Image (cartoon, rainbow, N blue to C red; front, side):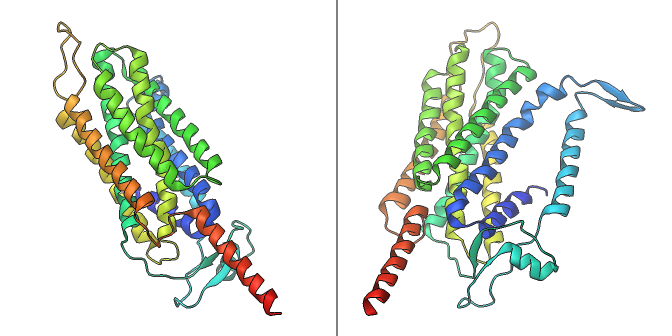
Length: 356
């Protein structure tokens, strides 16, 4: 039930942040989201060492994860109740647009002064149809969550068989994934001012092929740890790059629609679906693992990696066709659209000057 907060959070940002700042803010949200996915298992390194007694309550490695999550959720609820303010309502008609600030709208509705938001944007209701670029965003979120889900689901059985790692040692792998997600999200935030979202998506699609291909041909159950870590890093890059960029592109496509919450919820549903399909695909295709007395020079799940490669190629072709080849009137270029608007404004001012 609590997973609905993802859709609501991204829809909130889409309505309250200017287009030129949206990729940066989406990147920050994606940074903490992906970090959370990887940090969850990584907290085993902390909870595995807990063994205390508070009165009649014994806290150990079995119940401490649940208590930790409960504490986090209580803090989040408190912050939402005390800090979060509603964005302004849409204009009642499509012809009417209002350029205002969220703070101004909150002042009118809440009767108080607030400078929580300072970005000015146009809040008007528009009709959004299911266009090809929008469908691409749904495909991307489904597939990149599928990639990340397979990565997480593969890590434990492979490391246990190949290296005989304990759950605590495996948690360190997820910490590496967290560092990768944080680092790449920072890169996206820094470069989003001059690099289009479709460029990040293209790079993500390329790495979505490189990672599984590297694992397909180099992963054996007697591989070295550096080989395994190299594959993990290459495999973790696509999701870290794609989540923020895809969300930013998606928010531009549905900007101004009163159905932002619905579309964002649908996007989150597909993200969860991808996260469910990934581990199930691993379970169906990982194959048999060698026993302790058997030769471990056996490829790791070749069928699984082949299937992932097929999906990766489909995603790459779809992104290249929709974002680079097929012409569209949809706002897929954030910086280009901004420059076009400025050119039109300058041209209008020039015409007025000539008339005078």
